[in-house]
Length: 166
Image (tube, rainbow, N blue to C red):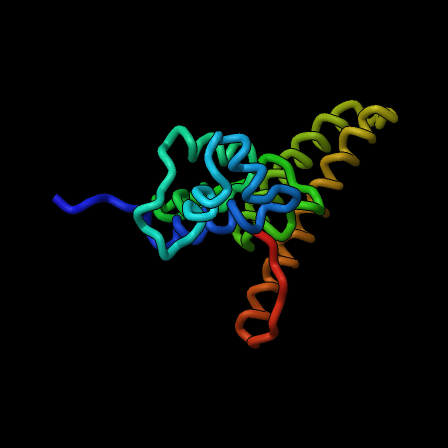
């Protein structure tokens, strides 16, 4: 029986988690896991298929780094889309076009529901306005994320170099 290993896509995502998570480096991950720095760097090396963390360590790494790269790979491999619950400017670089559009659609549905509730009595209270305003802000943020994701795709097509984290 051949030995099971992570796909190249998953290994690349693991590399991103270990080496490109903003504010967290391989040494911090190693300290958290109780592994050596070199071992964690080997986990993140796509060319070393024999250095793979256990499932427990992988879960701990995902929780510690909060980096969704590996989850995205697994979701896409299974035909799913990983959609973040919240969308803020710091996470725009992590979202794909489809994920950002789905987030926008979710917020649009919430906005429709809130506007219907607000207009039932033809009176808009300051609290009702604030609730609706927050939802509209979510829409703006997710549409901005979709625009940025689409721009990244265009730059890849045009061959313009770009720096992207995780």
